[in-house]
Length: 304
Image (cartoon, rainbow, N blue to C red; front, side):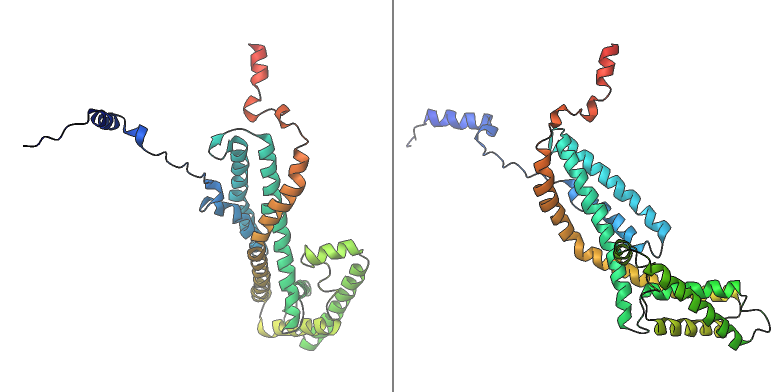
């Protein structure tokens, strides 16, 4: 029988390899850090305030509640960036300040502006259809109708319809003239702000075509006194119409936010942070700023 000679060197090498398997295994590539706050589902909390901005017209109380998880997310994100650099613990005031500016601009200020511009844009878009009046002008007209009907008790017994219409037209003429005169006194800055960010509440009626808005007001008032029996029924009918107008503006806010959320993030990150903020922060010595964990330590050591 042929005996194959044993290579003791190979044997001992194999033996050592078995005893220390970790030494001979290739090093595993270091996993890339994935920020949990920058990925779904946690990232979704950062957009809840956008929903609040969009629905503020139709549900202001609920809209305020949507800001709670968003603000909690912003605080957690800023603290996380202060405390950690990727998956390594390395507190940095500079990093926290940069992230705070990013969240303030990309998650609060610019989306708020975008949402209001979207509402104003959709309100103006209504001028190309139907009565060719802005949504805000219609809403304010319906509110005037409600106020006029209640204060003049138009549903009282024995009221003459023609007299009611005549009285309403006179009051609305005065209302329109007052809005026009008051708005024309405003300076250009107020008018631009009102148009873009305030949903044109001041200028909605004043900027409307006089004939169209007066015809719309008369038609809606006549419909109310014809179809409603009392002020409760009237308020219910008008609130439904106003809700539809507000829902249209909310759709405008949602549309604007969906279209701009990505560009806003990139603009803030690459322009505001990279080109303007970081060069200025390089001039600040953040090492002299106390860390959050250091507050109170100095006083405690002195008293000891």
